[in-house]
Each structure stands twice: as C-alpha cells, then as structure tokens.
Image (cartoon, rainbow, N blue to C red; front, side, top):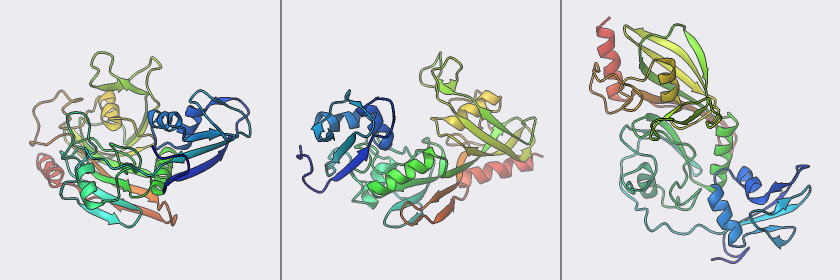
Amino acid sequence: MVAFGEGDGELLTLQYPKPLPMRLDRWLVAQRPEQSRARIQKFIDAGYVRVNGVTGRAKTPLRPNDTVQLWMPPPEPLPYLVAQDIPLDVLFEDAHLIVLNKPAGLTVHPAPGNRDGTLVNGLLHHCPDLPGIGGEMRPGIVHRLDKDTTGCIVVAKSQEALVKLQVQIQQRIASREYLAVVHGLPPADHGTVIGAIGRHPADRKKYAVVHDGSGRHACTHWSLVERLGDYALLRFKLDTGRTHQIRVHCAHLGHPIVGDPVYSRCRKLPLDLPGQALHAVQLGLDHPISGERMVFEAPLPQVFDKLLVVLRRRL
C-alpha cells in the first residue's frame, strides 16, 4: 500500500460541519458519493484517513469542527478488466467526459459471470486512462442504463468530473428524458408516479413498488406523445434513478413497456425486439469543468423506429 500522502494521489481536507456526532465512514461516503461505503472503509483500514491528525477508524464519531483528511492513493491497474475494441457511438467527447449512444444488448459494466464484452471494456480501449476512476469494476461510470435500454449515457474521464457529474445526478441538475412504447393507453395526457422501489417480495430478481419501508423513494414524470391504437408512445423525465425505475413504474401503472422480458407478460409483440422499447433520448448537464449547459440527444435505434412505423400502419 502507498503511504499516506505519498505518490500522485489526491489529498482532501474537510471540516465536519454538523452539530451532532456522526460515524466517520458514513460521513465520508456522503462527501464522496462516487465511492462505495466498502471502498471508503478500505481507505480507513489502510490508514488513509485522519481525524484531527490522528488515524481514524470507521466508527470514529465526528464532532463539530473536526478536521478530516482523506488520502486517495493513485489508482492501481485493473488486470482483470481487459480493454476490448468494441464500437462506440460517440455523441460528444473532450478531455473530461464522453457521451455515448448505447445500443441494446450492451451491459454497462462487468459483473460476476460477465467480465468482458461490456461498455466498460470498450471504454478502456477508447480511453486508456480510465482505470481507477470511481472504483475497480465501474471506472468512470456516472450512471447506468439497463442492458437492453438504448440511448444517452455519460462517462467521466477524470475523478473531478466523476464527482461533479454524480452530484448533478443526485441534485437533479442533470436531466434525463426517455421515450418508451407501452401497452395500453393511459387515462390522461400526463402524470407523475411516486412509489418507493425495492426488491419484489416474491421474486428477488425483480423490483417492485413497495410499501413496507424497504424501498427507496422514486419519482417518474410521464407525458403522452402519441396514441398508437392499443399502444402509446410516452416520454419520461426522472427525478431519481433507481434500478429499473421506468420499467417498474410503467408496470405499476398497468402499462408495461413493450418487449420488457421481466415486467411485461405479453408475449405476442407487433415486432421482434431485442428487449424493452425504452430509449434514453436526451441528457442535459452542466459541464463539470466549464459549467456550460450542454444538452445531448440520441437518435432512436432502427428497431424502435420500425416499431413505430408498424404501429402507425395499424391505425
């Protein structure tokens, strides 16, 4: 391990501002949202965190005006993540971030049993300096899209950009809008779904709107774009970004997304689809360095366009 303060790492000096005590590890996770609690605890266990000049422990209680120093050593290479020449549809790129139009069938980051062929593997080939930014298995990842969801996704190319972009997601400075074709026709032209999302009580591989306090707050705004007979084209804007949020909320409304293999029971589709007809059409954010407001749009994938053509012909 690198000694505290040595090498090309990052040294943060923070002041604890709250009137009531709080555990060191919990507070640091709130200050560095791009790092998991487990990773913060590893920094603490390695002696990379000091409170008022003394090496801290995870349970160390912080008190008003305590000075906390966090040393983040330079990133270590990731030998098990291989760079792969995977085609990337780049919408924008500079020294700090890259915005992509993700295709269906591409998983964002590796996971057990799926260590290659992901967006991260392609990014490591495209951006060799990415390893170590924001965690071992998810370098540079600000937010994610489901495997078969297409459209805009932003990836940070520096630690500073990652932290600032994740804060924008959390504070709703960044805006994300989606298009989806759903079964049935909603009873209104627009609406909002507010429903905590947690693990499905009967199927742990699924998520659902739950009412037992186990879920996390989720809010989805939707509006009707086009009536398509027994189907509808909807546009969504997210206030939160929970796993499967739009898919779960649509199913909760009784209008599951066409082609959703998890949340829709309808097997007869108007067109063969690679997955759910859900597309991240627009992403707005403030540039993490310049502050310039930027809005990106991803064109609909060919199969989504074809689905709309088929449905319109049926009218």
